[in-house]
Image (cartoon, rainbow, N blue to C red; front, top):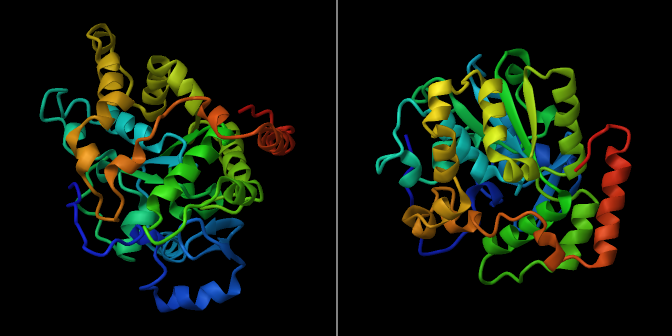
Length: 333
């Protein structure tokens, strides 16, 4: 069921970025890990080669210990700020297209995509280390930013599906910088572009290094194409209909010729479009139980927006890192 919104007279960062209410296990783990200054939380901690906030890491560990994947599960995996909100909406509408019409009562018209497809580690297991998942109907849809090496073992061992979406690192960084500043409290200074750019390039941001995250799923998609579908945000923007068909075929929910002739694909794409979702009242004034305002997830959604923020030196540095990291893999972003 969708989660209720909540308000607070004392603003706080999202729950997964808070530093308190940690389990004893997490309290004992943190001192053994490398740490760096966080973009929103006080610190980020390096675990299995990737960076996490304290309470979000607690969710990761709990998820790894307790989550049991089912064969029919579908996981939406992204690097942060790579089109996650859009992908959640598309997959929810795709998988549930027989259950809901595209009239006034469709859940996406009344609830944030983040309520309908919750984050596994930074939502479900952050709020409860042993949650009851019995209310989720099959196929269960979960989202995560977890790198491949940190997924629960049960996900690796069963034939569930993973849809992975990434984005040009320049646009990813700019979007992440804007989002982090939206989450910072009024009494906190905004992150300067130059400061967090350097940290992003060094791999110090949530679920980063970006390039290692992408490469993990890229290689897995080549080795296990029935398990992992690797998508690029830019392709989804350029050819949404063909990409949606690709996703539906991969998940085992192909569109019939009758559905295609009726314009159902175009209907889903329209329902899940940036303009449609961002102008819904729930996404203009609603708030998630984890603390974020729904409108924080809608900025521009454009390809190439980085040109307005990055200077030539920054672009050259990011392009050089990307070429160095991806050169031997055959991946082009």
